[in-house]
Amino acid sequence: MNPAYIHHHAAQAITSKNNHYAQLKEMNCLSRSEAWIFYTSFYLPSITYSLPMNPLSIQQCTDLNARICQVLLPKCGYNRNMSAAKRYAPHYLGGAGFRHLYFEQGDLLLQHIFKYLNSPETTIGKLLRTTISWTQAFLGTSRSFLTDTHQRLPPTGPSWLLDLRKFLIAINANVHLSDFPISKPLRSQDRFIMDIALQNQQHRRPEIMVFFGSGYIIIGKYDFFFFPTKLQ
Image 1 (spheres, helix red, strand yellow):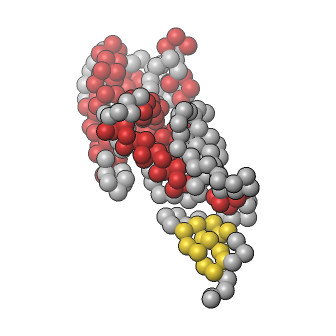
Image 2 (cartoon, one colour):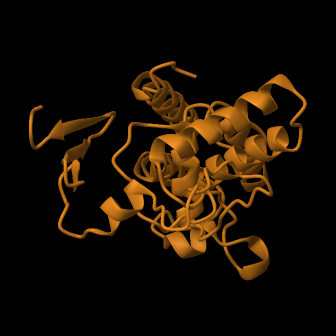
Image 3 (cartoon, helix red, strand yellow):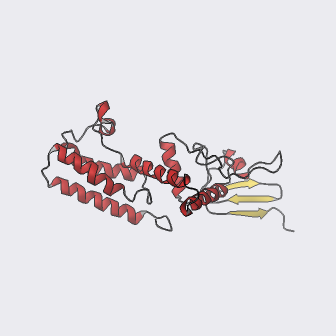
């Protein structure tokens, strides 16, 4: 995984590999069964191997699917212009049974997170829980960002956990943790500052400004700043 979480080079490598496989299939005369074996036993494991650590956007995955399916659909006996609904529907429902790479990627992301959440005594399990706790504290909301996937979030930088959240939104799912680390209010009237800011529909800019009598808190993309209205 890139420490800066920049997937540009990883996306280029996967696209290059995808184009290579498509060109390879264009120059081969395989039977329908052989083409399907190539897709399920060789192409999918090879392309999806690095996706959990370098997640791509749904548009990038759609472009990869379009390129390989343009070649594989006729090889498997289907019209290359068949609708996406039929292309990705399972065989038992009359579909072609192809896999959308975005959902394959999301499935692998969930497998990774559940594997280590169910192993809290391991080093990676501890680091994952620490990362979830830090991300929740950084967002500053009162609800779990993996459980309440439809709540608005403040502007943030790229994150592996937020990419997982985008997939959960796409499939209308959520992740429940029995001991999710959320700070509890100390007094009965305490409220989360970020909840108050996000409820204000007037703030559409990348920064969110909240007034607290003695000054303003500017909540930006990566940090927040306090500007007093009066200088002592």
